[in-house]
Image (cartoon, rainbow, N blue to C red; front, side, top):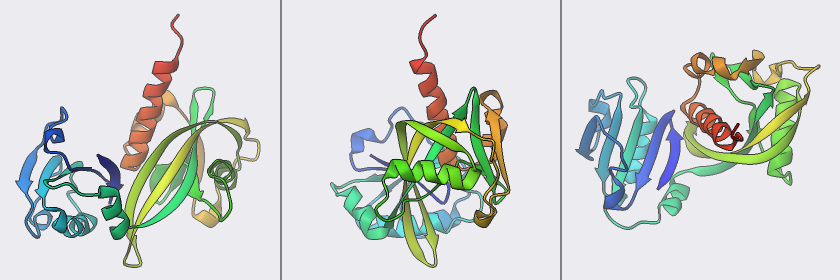
Length: 230
């Protein structure tokens, strides 16, 4: 299974017919036909069965949805196909790194473009993923942090200048060591930097990206799993 976000919609691509249910329920199930999404107004979870030769067309349709977006789209391909190769043919891959920075029971977040996000950015040529993550946190937030562990990788697809981009972002769990110079990086159009207590994350995440919601939910679940028993 390939899992990524396209146009802020959770996309799953499956090429084995026995995987389609996976314990999930769907609000809409259909064979793919051209302009299917243009005539659909479903905002829940969709299952679309498609021949691999039409997958590129479907991905283009998804990227053009402007309103009433589905929560998720599971794409089932009937025949065996190298999905990673197909995605590489459709998207240009870029790599980024970022941090889930914590201070006691708070998470560092940035506010940009009317949306809450986590600090992250592109990996520079010759730079390690870890160093890029630490540098981006410092540049975007004015916070010095140390990475504790690599945590998760998210995939986010989007269009820019008519090019299809697939961004691979590696996330590290970090601990703040100095926030006395904390300030938003105005050059990157960041309006606000804030420590958000974990008990106050839910309303913040309602105004965030689907990939960030998934990431922080996974992080909170991870914290519960690794906490020692009393």
